[in-house]
Image (cartoon, rainbow, N blue to C red; front, side, top):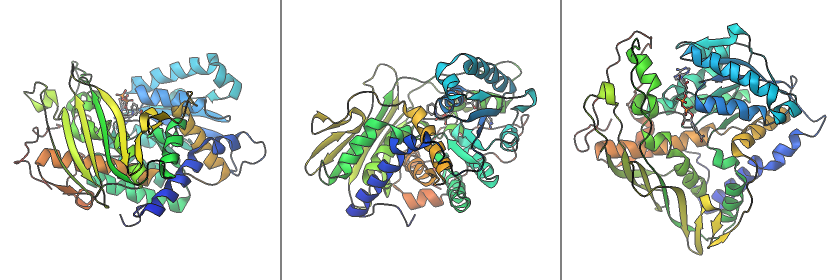
Length: 436
Ligand SMILES: NC(=O)c1ccc[n+]([C@@H]2O[C@H](COP(=O)([O-])OP(=O)(O)OC[C@H]3O[C@@H](n4cnc5c(N)ncnc54)[C@H](O)[C@@H]3O)[C@@H](O)[C@H]2O)c1
């Protein structure tokens, strides 16, 4: 990581200003100006990979984001989820006012609803030119590489990997995408959220002076658990209950807290250099093949290259103090980005455009303008930030960003097949689990 934007104050500010302008509504407004589209084929043909909660939501969001959108293919490990989403989207296209106003369509033939471990490749090969990646993040590096290799524009959900081996693949994909001038936007939607954009712009312009400390939380109650049904293979069970298996979710510091870590990295203009942290599991745990192998609490001290510290906490335990938030302390004041508040005053009122829609509006506008946005490196760095914190908590050791990036840890099973036997590693033990 030699070209991290913002290794000094001036470039950090320039980077933040640039980000704000590119991701703002100025780009979105351009989309609706007739006659300015640079792309030869103006129709955004969407293929969705991962048809669960977020994949379904993103499919509706893209149909609200711009005219000239057509959903053409769906893929899920479980075929019935792809077919179920097709039925819902056809009803949505017929009944939803905004979708009808924009003239957007759902044209998914029977044979373009794919299932199985290779469903992703079939969606990519289906004729779609805009791929939505919304599976559990363990698959993201493989799916990103395949979509970039095929020359597709991409909306990728966060996080974009679960270990250093995966992030290295993602950074390779980023370089290839840049060469091919592909557009990629990530589901770190705060970067497309009007209130965050205004707040972070003012921070970049010096509203709180130089940042001297940061903290962020994703503290919530227990997450869902999906029981094993009869007939399920190991892979079926683990994919369906993916949030409990490290190779699929990266643990919750990666899977959800990445949002808040990304905001802190945004404020600092790049990722931290080092992490020292701790964590553990209070949730009942007998057999990792049944219960999974993730922690349910983390507390990490991250240190940025300029010596500034960020305290991060992530917890999934019922009946505790909950908060999903960030706070910045500077030489001239304080900021709570998630409240759009600087020095005690609100800097943005109103709701703004739904950021889950705005991220597609910005992505599509950049494609049509011929000036592709590419957020893959930024989200890869924020994902690796979370991975570095998890590695420190699992082992009890200090972990640097460079070490995490070069790490030998590669959790993705070789040669996935539905019937394979899929052992699950034991829960890590700080002080005993090896740092690799
Ligand atoms: N940006 C946000 O605010 C936000 C919100 C929710 C979820 N997400 C992200 O979206 C992703 C999915 O989360 P979700 O809540 O939709 O989970 P989900 O369980 O509802 O859906 C995941 C879907 O992916 C499918 N799937 C799993 N492995 C697959 C594979 N190899 N190929 C094809 N399909 C596969 C599953 O069968 C399931 O239908 C996660 O990375 C999560 O972090 C982001």
